[in-house]
Image (cartoon, rainbow, N blue to C red; front, side, top):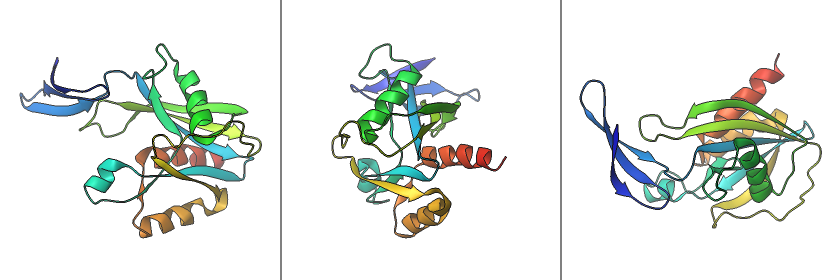
Length: 185
């Protein structure tokens, strides 16, 4: 059982009691049923990453930018939306791309289980060619760049970004884990 402590349109601060009887506070998204993150693989040669400005990271002086993937909330704007429809919509909105094949890798990735109730569905989108079919959005100024990286250079490139002080999202690293662990089979 949980109690709403603070309520906004997109986020709630809630409390619950742990099994040990301690009060526990966490963030909850009241208008979304899931979160999707999509790893776009272009022609089996490149991965598309997003360079993003995330206000919480900036506010706490953690990083000016972070490296992420096309992602979004399920059902926040499109009531009754399925996870599969959200994957297609977010890929089109944030990358301008249509996938030739989509593989869902996990539906229960906890982004930060001690702080938020949300879970993330990780999908890999295979795209035959980098052909923008619709002008991508900047998501309210959050997305500042789209970067194609050759698959063989991904690890080195991510390390370079981190060395520059750029944060890496956990969902990006999880998606890469699923992709590379299957590529080595």
